[in-house]
Structures are given as C-alpha cells and as structure tokens.
Length: 265
Image (cartoon, rainbow, N blue to C red; front, side, top):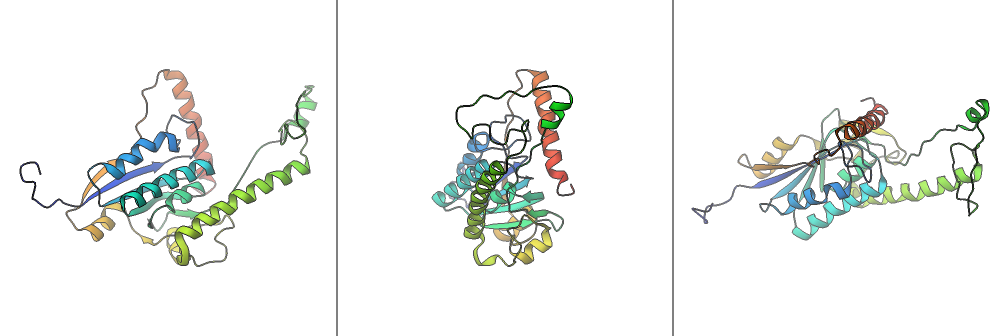
C-alpha cells in the first residue's frame, strides 16, 4: 500500500474475542469486564479502518453492569464510526453473554450453541443452623436497619427477599428493554424473557439470532473471498505473584465451570 497508494484495499474485518464470566475487578482469565477490554475494543474499531467488527462471544454471563458497559461501548463506537457489528456465538451466549451479543447488528451461532437465559439470578447459602450446632454465636452490629440484609449467617427475612426481588425486577426490565430495542420485530416467542435457553436453530426461529454460521464463511459471504481478518483478544498481565495468580485463576475457572454446568456444558 505504501508503494502504491492508489491500489484498492481489501476489506478488513476486526475479530474481537469476548470470552469468560462477566465480572468487575478481575484481572485473570476467564473474567471479562469493561475496564479490562476497553483498550482492545477501541483498537478493534479504529485500527486499519475495518469494514466491520465481528465479536466472538462465549460467555455464561455474570454482572449485568459490566454486560451493559461492554455492550454500550460496542454500540457507541459502532455508531460513531458507522461500522457494522456481527456477533458469532461459540458454546454459549446466555444471560449477560447474550446481553453483549445483542449489541451487534446481527447475531449468528452454531446449531448447537446455547442462547438466551434472559433473566436475573442471585444465589446464596444459609449457615445460621450450622453455627448453632457447632456452638458459634454470630454477632453483627449495624447502623441502619437494613444494613445486614440477606446476611447468610442469619435466618432469612421475608422482607429482605422481597427487596431483593424488587431489585431483580428492575434489572430484568432493563435487560428486556435492551433486547427489544436491539432485536425489534425479529423477536418471535412468548417465553423469551422467562430465563429459558435454547439451541442455535431454535434461537433462529425465536428471532434471538439471525442465522447459523461462523466468522470466516459469513464474512467472506458479505465482504468477498479476499476479506482480511485482524484478531483481537484481551492480553493478560504478567503475574507478579505466581502462587496467588495461580490460585486466583483456579477460582475463576471453577466459577465459570459451575456457571456453564447450568446449561449442560
């Protein structure tokens, strides 16, 4: 190109990989968050004047805030630079993973991919009976009557559960709003927002995704056989403390494994 500036450029597609549990503050794989991906996402939209950005999503979900931030960043850059975005789902894009995928103009997946789970979940344990059996007394001091809400070492309070459900309804409503805004008239089903999930082929029927396909063939279909690809993924920091990094990575992997197990993966 430098020798012949008049030569026509081949189309370029930035391939941005978004993989792992979505959570704030994590620095290790497979945690995915806006802070850790911001620079990479910016490069995918700016470097080399791409004709499109393809986001490869493989996530069991996680933080609704981080899902929203990542999705908003993708949409903001796409609209600002007038660059189309295509999402490609690998094993699964459920819950927050689907929230991010919905930021694309089109979504494609494998026939066996798991799609959906549009809902909000909160899980915990109750340890108050265990403490009594082993002779341990729980002492909690608060300023504010609701400060100890949902403490797993105290008996469950129905009022606390009701407050939690109100919060979940707000988050669920926002999730539904985003999906309806992005997918519009393509949606076709009554159980889309109940937390159910489906395989890729059924997701096409329901309008949650647009088709069955993978990155290279689909981009070649749209931009021609000579399309070029430039791949982006989060770079991990060199571990300062090998033992703590290893322990943290194991914990992150166990968390993701547990979340994926809910969908049979």
